[in-house]
Picture 1 (spheres, one colour):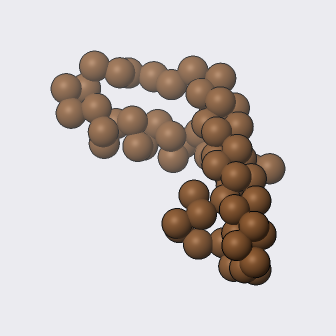
Picture 2 (cartoon, one colour; picture 1 turned 60 degrees about the vertical axis):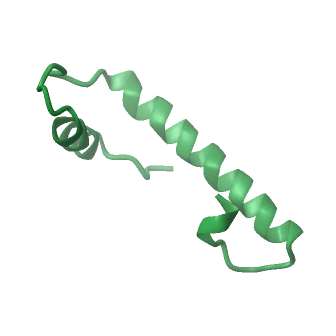
Length: 61
C-alpha cells in the first residue's frame, strides 16, 4: 500500500521543524510511517464494523 510519499514526509518535517535542526529523513521513516497508518486504518475499520457502519469516520480512528 503506498499511502505515504517520502517527498511529502520531508516537506512536513521541514515545516514542523521550526529550528531547522533536522536536515534529512532516513528511508526507514517512510516504511515505519506506512505501517503506523495501516495499523490506524485497520483499527478504524474494525471499529466501524463493530458499530454496524459501512463508512469509516474520523471517530473510528
